[in-house]
Length: 95
Image 1 (cartoon, helix red, strand yellow):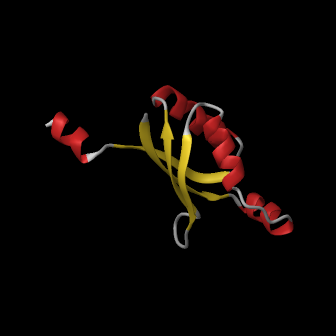
Image 2 (cartoon, one colour; image 1 turned 90 degrees about the vertical axis):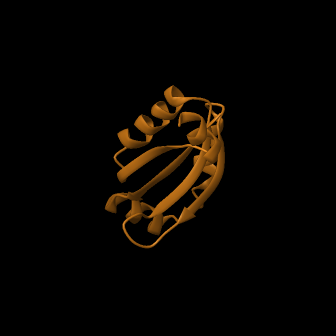
Image 3 (cartoon, rainbow, N blue to C red; image 1 turned 180 degrees about the horizontal axis):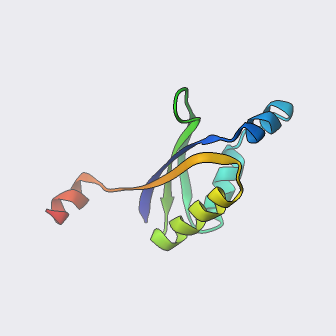
């Protein structure tokens, strides 16, 4: 399986909803990834340009793109990014 870094921020409306009804989004993110055969490795919240960063394992680029499109299409996030990650061994093989 491929590894990905995901990061981004909440739109103001999403923050307003979370402030009104606080919830741990880990369960939702984990369920979304598991629905495509993936796995949530870590989810963190951050100060600065991004509100959250996470690591996920996903079967392939098509499934990763599907999740990315689904997340971006909600309008709840700003500057959502999904970055493929390569191991040191992958890079050596590429060289």
